[in-house]
Image (cartoon, rainbow, N blue to C red; front, side, top):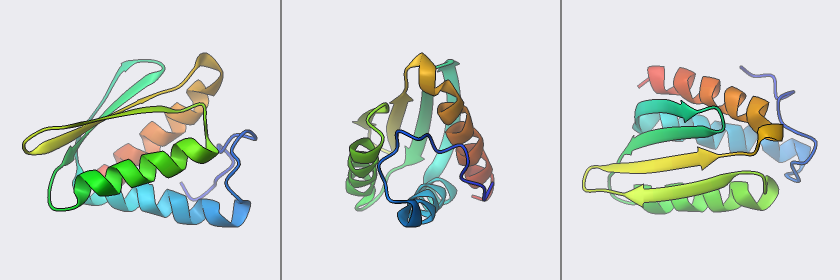
Length: 111
């Protein structure tokens, strides 16, 4: 999924930086994703293997993502061995969450 056409117009991240951000998400998921679920159409849950610096890495990434795509709501819940990342959007951005879920699943399969 190299095409970034699914990135919404409301994203304020400069176009030339978007492939780098997507690569960060891909790397995180290919290295750490253990489980992905979609409990509701506007809600995606990721379980990521914890480890040294991983929680800070996740928090940094979602903070930067929130800065350019304010329609995302991220909730990070650290556990002993896993970090749960809940991602929610409004109805208007369901297609963006669909694309993120597909991308995340594909990256996680590489693990």
